[in-house]
Image 1 (cartoon, helix red, strand yellow):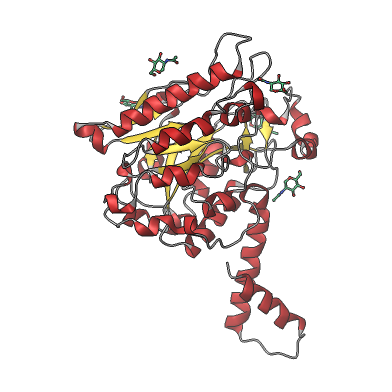
Image 2: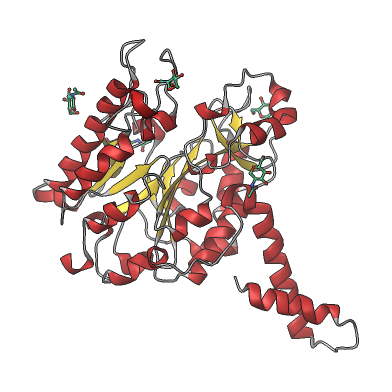
Length: 399
Ligand SMILES: *[C@@H]1O[C@H](CO)[C@@H](O)[C@H](O)[C@H]1NC(C)=O
Ligand SMILES: *[C@@H]1O[C@H](CO)[C@@H](O)[C@H](O)[C@H]1NC(C)=O
Ligand SMILES: *[C@@H]1O[C@H](CO)[C@@H](O)[C@H](O)[C@H]1NC(C)=O
Ligand SMILES: *[C@@H]1O[C@H](CO)[C@@H](O)[C@H](O)[C@H]1NC(C)=O
Ligand SMILES: *[C@@H]1O[C@H](CO)[C@@H](O)[C@H](O)[C@H]1NC(C)=O
């Protein structure tokens, strides 16, 4: 948003009451201040808003409107909401998470990112995996990674306003938000009718109606998705009348059809037209206990590149299918435990080939011109050329 207008407005305010304001301008001033409040509320999850002006913040500008989204390579992030989940954040929330007495694990087990959403957007990330559930009082939808509460105050609705503002500032860009109901949060938490009602309310406000891509059960073209959020619904509304599901825009990836820890999910998201997504979500390697991190990293790299290769070499109807690969993983039940960070980035001299992210760079360089689909990274900003190397696979002139 325009910080300039905001600070100029404040400066005017401090001149005192000698200046007369018209009704209209004081209303718009209040709108600015209200937005400022919402973005501040969102900041523990969204980050502190700043209008990025770098080439990656508008990379989609170079692609024609009629580009089918299923033909694009779209960089994304897994467990987006965990970017600030340090020991300090975990401890700051102890008084809330202690209320349900669940055993808490070290923050490294839950943390999958280190940069805020606003930086992700400006760095070219366009697909976001976000996990919500009720806070412990069953009042607001907040963010978790398993039992790790990420903020008690930043709600899903607050965070969506961050995206709305960024899309206003970057109308050429299309954003894909995957919303998933996170299980195993508070001890009695359930995806019950109250949760589902609050989610529907959040996704049908006037603001949501303006910024959500109305496209349904299809991905469509980039032109139709620009300036909007296309929803990936990794949730069911099974406690509400069927009309609620019928009216929800976006693509439905029902959790009941998303098989757990599967390197090759075939998920039908449009039964009428038989549209299938080919998904790799092999996140827990379960290699033999005591095996080195390098083995787990290799297994994960193998599963991920196998799905990229399926996308690149698809023929017939599969050419127009959605391919979605998660480069993220963990193996925290190994001894010693492998955190998401060790899987993504390796563990120093113990993993001379690096983690999944380092190993993906030469792979991406070998895939020039190919469609790989959507790639969800952990620690997307490391190595620093990861996202750019992924974007460089498909020059806009390819279309
Ligand atoms: C990130 O976490 C630290 C430690 O809990 C906190 O002081 C800081 O305000 C958080 N950042 C944001 C943007 O909320
Ligand atoms: C929240 O909802 C769950 C599931 O319906 C219920 O078991 C729990 O008692 C509720 N908690 C509060 C504080 O009302
Ligand atoms: C799961 O997929 C099947 C087709 O493979 C479909 O008939 C069914 O409706 C899907 N389930 C849900 C809950 O969407
Ligand atoms: C590599 O991935 C392929 C395809 O998913 C699988 O068949 C094979 O067993 C994997 N090999 C290793 C060493 O993980
Ligand atoms: C990672 O490296 C540290 C320091 O060398 C070591 O203590 C730890 O056990 C290693 N973890 C894994 C999973 O390799």
